[in-house]
Image 1: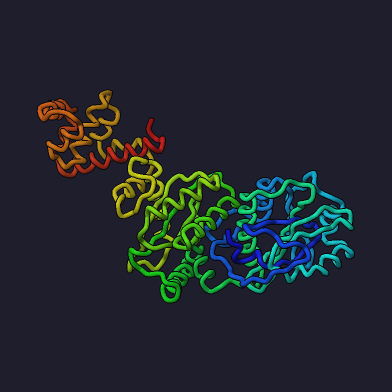
Image 2: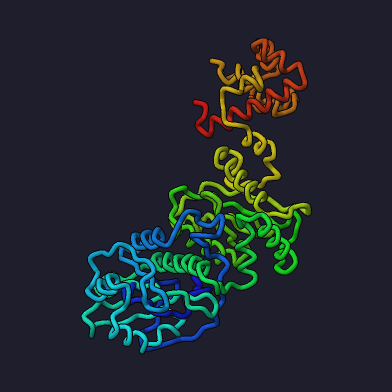
Length: 442
């Protein structure tokens, strides 16, 4: 796991110190390593970036992260003042209590921390505070390019070492915090590409169109079917840290073939190119399993030369993922081009009572006591009336098929003899199947 974007330089805000970690291990307190700083495009603004962990805020984030790490969290600003803190557990010491109570780090401890040049460091640092009668901390600086936004602190002294999956969660959380804090400052230092990618799903349609135009002009995006939006539908109860971690892990595993551009509802949206579908899907599935995130389905939709807004494309990808989830027999990962009729059906107002409006024949078959009638008619319509194919699908003889059709309810026989009613019957049966899988018809 890389630490692109913000693990490399810290400032130590209020000594309500609590360390956070990333995929890389912190340096010892006396060492500093300088690394090139590369902002990442995968962070999500918990407060203001549309489609990215909507409704979440920093308090929610630190509370979730504290639960994930089984230890309390504090985020300070570069002036050593606490910005936000989780509930404090048993590991709290007098230093943290005073810092949180007074909203500032005590002068002597602050002078010590400043002497460590934490505000210039771009790496997580272990801070020994034994001389102040306080626990050891891990300080994780949060940078956006050359701007220090804050420091995340964890108490590490006397606690079990952080596990690899906890470091990944920390890394992802810092990525999210960076975007939130950057959005709250006037000096938001994002790279041009990051800014464009984060605006592709902005709330303002003008901003979205401008971002897509810039992505096409300067960042390799093309307005054609080779550019795909992939919607990765995940569990609705997946926390912000898990979502951020999964997004970053997918980017890393696919070597940026998939770039996280935002979230809508319970779906992570990635931008990529057509091709290598099986490899990319396998990477997404593997990373979701590794992160312990429920992966419901994957849907993809391509741009067209007429698209000037990515949001409708993302919505189409999400709708496709919904079809894949509700109709698993079609596959766990689907492309919108292959399920157009199902997308039409998914847009129909969910009201099973209206099935009798659309097709009385379909309504009769759905509620028929003999399921073979529905199965027979659906096979007939699916195979365009080709008797041989229908018989092969149903494993019956031709005479048996004719007998079944002859004994259908009159409303069904009438529908099969009329072109428009026959089409409505076919779609009505598919609509019923969709509603049954969604739990609307039992």
